[in-house]
Image 1 (spheres, protein in one colour):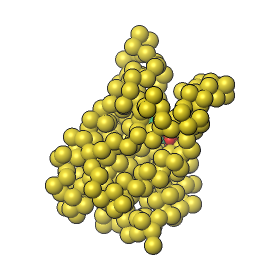
Image 2 (tube, rainbow, N blue to C red):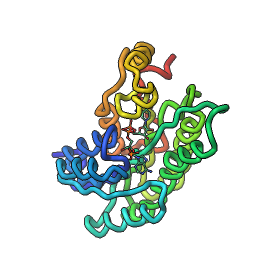
Image 3 (cartoon, rainbow, N blue to C red):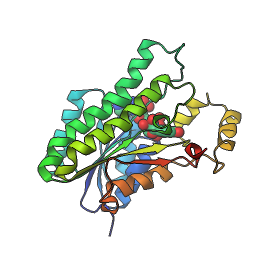
Image 4 (cartoon, helix red, strand yellow):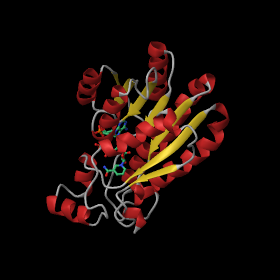
Length: 246
Ligand code: NAP
């Protein structure tokens, strides 16, 4: 028996990286998975592999969110889980970040999560159950270099998660955040400018001595999506190989 048998899960940014890994694991655990992303070809490939559905979706668009929710409810009658995973990183400190870059990061990483939670709330409230998993970062726990916009967006996700948990708890809906550290995905290539030596140097600075694989975040997302975490809400789950313990 799977931990998500009979459940319907929407995973944003599910075409690659951590979102893809979550989609594959959730499907293995019995969920019907709706992968959403801007990357249509990759998203369709993953959806076909796992017997799920791909929907092209820009998380910054309220109309797109309405369509994703409508299509999911029409096809499956319910939404049990939302993983707000889509995100971008733009390198920049206070002095060199343009307003355009700042707004783009906030739009996708912060407003996207707000719109997502708002979009699924009515359906979950009606069902009196649901789990929302918001992917923040250790950049939402600490100050991190070259991350003025990214850090702002991820601190906002951490705060919004708690506010939404307070709001939705009485309806049987749990809302939690995950705070990954250094995860070996395309985003990390951006952080390190594609430099293997910079990547290795960063890995040496992690107490566990390595970057995580995407699956090591997916297993925590599964825990939060499933009834195994039935009493956890408004909480932050730091999965960082010990970085924030320093
Ligand atoms: P990734 O491989 O870059 O995946 C992010 C996915 O989000 C991509 O498929 C991307 O598609 C999609 N996306 C971006 N903007 C979107 C939009 N407007 N609408 C819909 N989808 C959009 O990175 P990842 O590491 O898996 O990141 C997943 C989450 O973990 C992000 O929220 C990230 O901030 C967080 N995180 C990552 C790390 C890390 O070390 N990798 C650490 C802490 C937190 P496009 O290519 O089309 O943009």
